Amino acid sequence: MATEKKVTAIKNTPKHLLGIQNLSVLEAKEILNEAKSFIKLNRGSSKKLDVLRGKTQINLFFEPSTRTQSSFDLAGKRLGADVMTINMGNSALKKGETLIDTAMTLNAMHPDIIVIRHQDSGAPNLLSQKVNCTVINAGDGRREHPTQALLDALTIINRKGNIEGLKIAICGDILHSRVARSNIYLMNMLGAEVNVIAPKTLMPKGIDNLGVRSFTDMKKGLDGCDIVMMLRLQNERMQGSFLPSKREYYEFFGLTPEKLKFAKKDALLMHPGPMNRGVEIDTKLADDINVSLVKEQVELGVAVRMACLKLYCK
Ligand code: NCD
Image 1 (spheres, rainbow, N blue to C red):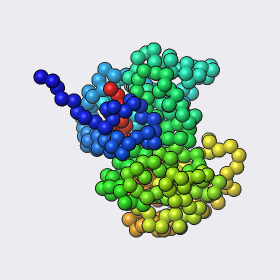
Image 2 (cartoon, protein in one colour):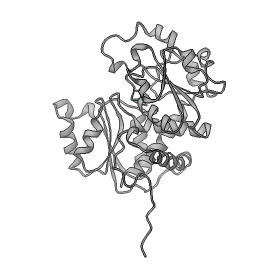
Image 3 (cartoon, rainbow, N blue to C red):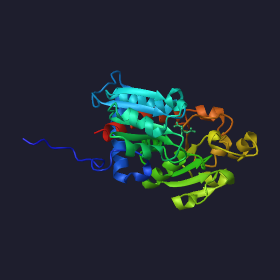
């Protein structure tokens, strides 16, 4: 008797997760639905499945990471994969090896999935053309960070029930933020209205073409918002001077309890981390369990990464 195969939206697409821009609504929703089933598992006492048993997952991190790296690490292990994490700071990269050489070396070891974070926009796409396995983007330059946007979406759905019809503000260093770009694509795709708020120097030119409204004033930008997503100043991507001082930045763009009042009464606060307390966010507000979803974002991040690994690793 022929066994019936589950029909999935992701089945016939390329087996890489390189960005939200390449996803369809159906694919995004399928990942979010799959992730929901892992939330409960992750809260239980027995967290191990054998969905990826026999598969090899390599996490290739060319940039520092705490949350994303440990999240992918745990996600793979909970699905039963053999997981190896390579921190490229300590690798042959220091001896001048290129991304392509590294890719060819790792490919020869027959991995099934490579998760990559890289400082150059487009590095995961390049890697995906050189290896035989699934490639998942864990953040590339200022381009995309798809699993962060997906975990943000899951966190919002978990609290608000839906994304459609919500008004979401993304505030801070929009210019250098891959989190902002992936979230703009995903939240728009799922039917939210998106405002971006930044000083002029940190607002990318042509941002309005991405279907957002842009503001340089927190009061106007936060008006009527259900979700306030704060971003870190990405100093490592800044060459030259973008801001007069951190103190002045906090004054105008740091989220304080007073500024949060410009948003809706029941507005919730998000941050992908790492947070710079006292720079983009008031430290007490960041820890206020009545408004801050920061811990939930980290928790649901593991569920989202499990869903991505399961759905993309064939
Ligand atoms: C973000 C990143 O690396 O893009 N962090 C993360 O993945 N949790 C945001 C940031 O570094 O500010």
